[in-house]
Length: 484
Image (tube, rainbow, N blue to C red):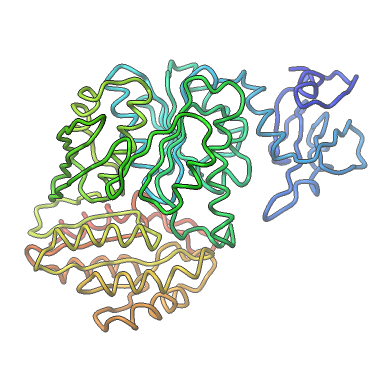
């Protein structure tokens, strides 16, 4: 592609015309003939590496400030926004050739994207998925490093999806990505808001900033050609009004407690799934999904709303939802013939943990609920004692352990959790070694009990210091159960 074409697209005038081989924001990945974009990062500033990029073969640079180097340097106000736009221009706007549905919110994003993908593909609509667990092109799985990839990777994945025949893409859109404009170049057709509870305050610092970042997905819906676009909003969430106000395209609401476009007027939970009565257009329809928990009733409502907005008929949607597979690490049941339930869940926020433990509490009945959990290091510290209180209140016994301690001392993290749980109960212990914690919980369990192993879900690693070690909660639990 010619440099002048790229600059014209960004509204930067130039007579310089050079053939560009690729775009990079990492100077170490530059090859001869590439275009380097200097990003003002949160950890490092890409402007420091302009000369490195030129030495490695960059033939032009996009920067937010003047740079003394031997190649043309183009200046713009915000290189993050520029690279997000350039990425899609470079790959020929693949997102515009498919339906694109974004899901944002603190909890539920992964399950909702999987539900939508499952139903669409049962209707021969090949669907791409971009999310926390992995990226999927139909049946093909690709690794995921971030919930929402950086713009160049995101545009490249979408180009692959479009080339492979995908008609629709469902995508988890994180607050980090929205604040950093990673998804700025995407042309979303639908946006889903799940809920907003405390998380990522280490990054956003204030709840208001967290909210404003999430809302950006909905404000973008109202720009450009809005034909066929829609918003789906959980009306039960306290933040719903802000999202409704920001959304200038047709809105579908869903909920349990309040009247909505789709409302579950009653629901029943079992160890095998959820059943609820759906009120839609004045009619009651029975719904059954093999995913248990009140939170999964909400997830199902969100998915059904989006699928209806995409033009599918309600009976077709509900028929396919009865056979939807379990989502890895999302209230995932581990079955090795043991006389008690073992559940792996990604719950790593106060709201997420409370939702999971309330469901587990109902399933346990008069039996014990034993919880294993920890909190991630180098992340929001304020939520740690809150999660300790929640587990102390809802569990019969808690084993506090390590999650991904990263560069923090695991004992300090556990100490923050202990501040909360010790104010509620003395029915807890601390085992920093996560494998030992899981083993202790399984040894303690009696017939009929429920064991929750929370925090890491689908993750198959543990981050200790700067090292990434193999660790899979489901794998460890199965191994211990098989050993008896």
